[in-house]
Figure 1 (cartoon, rainbow, N blue to C red):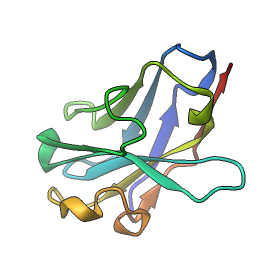
Figure 2: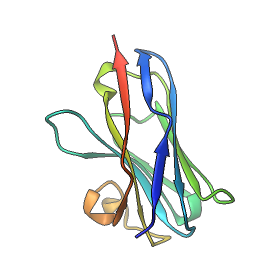
Figure 3: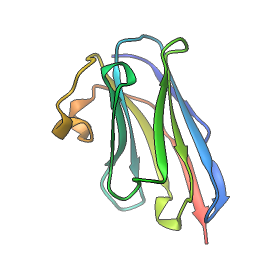
Figure 4: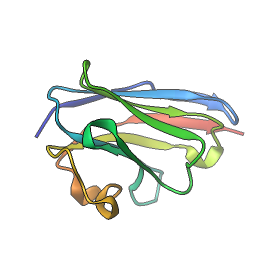
Amino acid sequence: QVQLVESGGGSVQAGGSLRLSCAAKYSRYSMAWFRQASGKEREGVAAITQGGSSTYYADSVKGRFTISQDNAKNAVYLQMNSLKPEDTAMYYCAAVPAVWVLARDTLRARTYDSWGQGTQVTVSS
């Protein structure tokens, strides 16, 4: 497992933007962002694999969120634009020591073996 540290959460009004960051101690990992709203199951939001060449998004965030990677810094980012109140949740960074992951598994929590502590995102209407 790898240590993951998230940052960048906060409170914003609907339509606003936030950028989440996740620092990992090691490279050559596929990484993803998940979120869990109060009373709901954890859901995959975005993933990046193959050294950053492949990205995957949940339908609910396509066109609004962008996942990216900085290999030099061993970090992954989630740029969130046009935020909606339903985006309110605890956001978690996740990683697995594989440069390639089956597309169908990229947004499944069981794929990943390392998790950060989470950062809260609150979007008000």
